[in-house]
Image 1 (tube, rainbow, N blue to C red):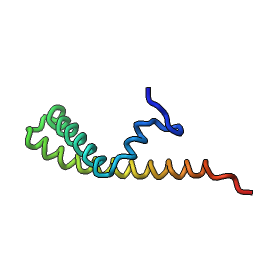
Image 2: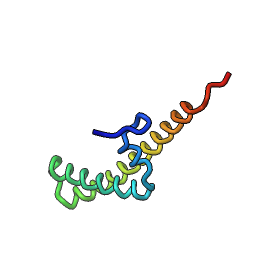
Image 3: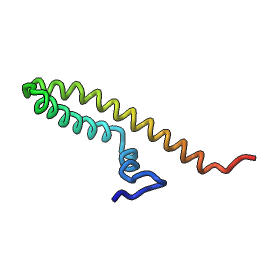
Image 4: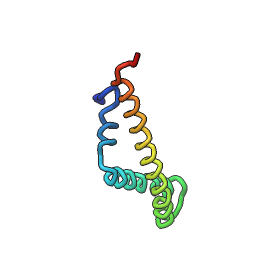
Length: 89
């Protein structure tokens, strides 16, 4: 069971609080492993070519994950700030 912080799962909050370098390293390592395996096992590519494709698509997947993390964190912070501001009037 996930613990929620301000209505958001704590694992998401922990991920967003990590340093960007750590996020990139974790995202790239996971993407590289998964995408290399997919190309090798499901697309029947040789190991060397699978690793090359894993590197290429791993970089792209890492960039997409970093953009999504930054965007969602910004959206969440704006929504939290709007909730905290007293109504004007």
